[in-house]
Image (cartoon, rainbow, N blue to C red; front, top):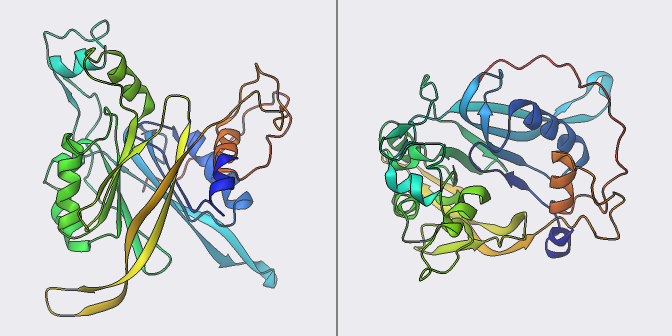
Length: 321
């Protein structure tokens, strides 16, 4: 609801690395495609691909329209793809200590993320006809091979980097590599981490280091770096961006005067308050993912009454993209 007071509409929703599974994501896309007419895309880190195979993946959905049958007008739907992470996460003693994982991972050893490495792909999605975006997953940002040359060749307008990392500040590794993409090819880059690891990092910090709740970092070709703060009592952040017309020129001299360069104009933390009088739920009720997203983004005035338990829906997974 705070988001609705601050902006007119939500046009995109981003989740960090490993945030969802395929079933949750599919339900979210299906519901929001019908109830949120101005939503243009969703990007999320996931523990499964579109075929429910386990791993570390990035989902992307772009909403579009097609003509209905028998002249019934246009029908709104989402086109979803998933692509796997290109590189495994390597945890050393320092990271294990920083995130307080020593009770589960012996810090005397080096640990590697247990995921399959499949065919490497880079997906670029078009929105508003003149802009494009791509999603990267954690280590893929730091490794030049194989996706950086492809991204530089395609020059997406926006790059979303999904992370499980500490606070996003200009001094961290993610900011350095985001700067490289912002300078060449000039993409606007948003790195986004999970609140869980940021909270663990704050809990194990030295007494001389203050808490840091920069859950994201914005970087564009103007050289501006903006930490996006989401305090520990908030559940999300609403960013305000604007697309400025710019001209892109290819190596062979062709010009595209209709391209867009995206710029940051502000952000507002938002939270779900289960005790708010506008909510028709009991304090102990569990909220579904759909209800949380709709409330945080201000797409609903209130959450509907708690539903009675029912059998889970049966669906056929889509073919992995």
